[in-house]
Length: 265
Ligand SMILES: [Zn+2]
Image (cartoon, rainbow, N blue to C red; front, top):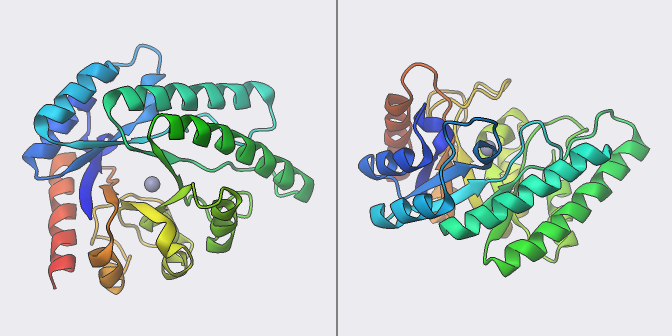
């Protein structure tokens, strides 16, 4: 498994600075946060060429988290859906120019738990995903869908729903298994067992089973030791998604040390 960090884990660093820091800390890849491309007056905005050049120089691979903030990939509101679609397509093209090979897609959520609305949101999300897969395929990028919330309003809150979505696209769509989110759902083992062959990407962090704290690996209640054999045999990419307000770089180091210890035993 190749281990990397999300740019969100590096505090205030720009993407190119995060890439250099990742190399310094012995990581092999960096996940770009796609929303950075669309913030007004963002200090984080850099060109795809510059990001790609620095990544190549440093020998760091790139993945991207497709835009998700203030968006909804299955929104029933035309304006939100249109913006979500546009930002996802722009981000895919930007990613391809930077040399990214894998993009993480956020599933949709419905505004209320009402069957006809759930169905409509699901259809909108599948339409968008289908369009994005065609574009991603032409750009040589794999799309992996991430497990998010546990509530019924989230489209892939359970392993069987994730598998159904993967099968809808003849397995062309892959899985980004977020261990922290799966832990809150108390379904980490079930996600692994149900989706094993489809999992290409991981988000690794920790929490105490209730809220999405994004703590360093090994500092919450997620029993990483139980998943040692899966992690050791995993051939894909894994991103540490640690959100730290006090000392981000130190928290990344703790997270990596703990993961290495778990894998070494
Ligand atoms: Zn995640």
